[in-house]
Length: 351
Ligand SMILES: *Cc1c(COP(=O)(O)O)cnc(C)c1O
Image (tube, rainbow, N blue to C red; front, side, top):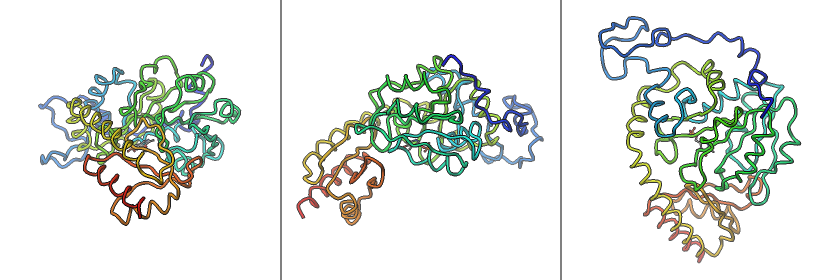
């Protein structure tokens, strides 16, 4: 990463953009109770949410900073990781000109966002054991390749990418490397956050939707260099994370012991589910997982999917994804839900 210069990646119109200045941006010291705020055309009658939220979500960031050991200046929050990913596209990828690289089978949003933003998606399928093909990826790169998306642990396969391969890509790819760590809390592998300072092109996304149990509030987190974070800050909608979301996130981030307990329980349940799946005759392969889900290969995914629906269990049929022919993805639920899943799988295997 010797020649990395963020200015070579930013879109021209974004470089010259004058960001919207909200009332709360112009006067930031909203801390003292004595001030009278007549600047934002809010309704003055208190109901808990009559004021605009903090556009920089400082309280949430301070907690994340403590928990993750990263400066608040290296954090940007979004309306789910999906907004964070979209901001990255819009800041760095010129429509109808630039391209990104993704490694199917992987999270579907990268491709959707590429299409929305009119960006070519160069797809380099993973190896049979779901690892990046480093040489092929580097061969696919051209001067308009702006972002490489690595989802590790990967959805829907469940595995983490080899550290050596990721490091080689970080060193040899001159654009941004976005590592999507939505499932990192369920993994044995360490987060790449520790290496943030070593790689100026590294962007890490995480979310409160999975391990933290807050999918409904929509809070995604982006960690990157101050330079990258400040570019994203210029284009984000001023109040992209609402007040209720910020309050709920703060409450949860103050109780990380609770989160850790739930994660341990989910991992225990994952082991129990895997044991049960081994007894199901039509399952031919159970893939290794670092996530709160398990991918399995069956005899006929679409038939088994329908049978489960008929028994009141909804899972994900991934059979149309590359390398995932006849594969089903099971999320780990509560003990009762998992018992029901295994019971029903055994039942339909005998019918
Ligand atoms: C679930 C998931 C996310 C989370 O997205 P949010 O918008 O934060 O809910 C991100 N990336 C991957 C790979 C996921 O599976």
